[in-house]
Length: 105
Image (cartoon, rainbow, N blue to C red; front, side, top):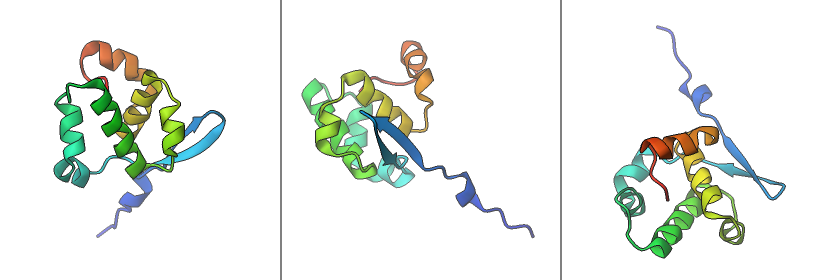
């Protein structure tokens, strides 16, 4: 039986913000199942400030991007970072949002 190395399919994601390169892990299945932050983001948390705070909290768990750097970004960039974490190509984020496939954070 041939062994397939699935680790080779896991890609380390990196983003560049203000000239610095940061690592970003994907959102795992366990996070989707266990983390109430993701539930509230997907269900529309209502209050925009709460949604932004929860987005930053999640990104702090899955990246090495400092909180201060995340807070310096505009809303669109923050949404694109989340899209990358979800495995979405950032160049398709605006089209996906327009089609209703990806919710704005």
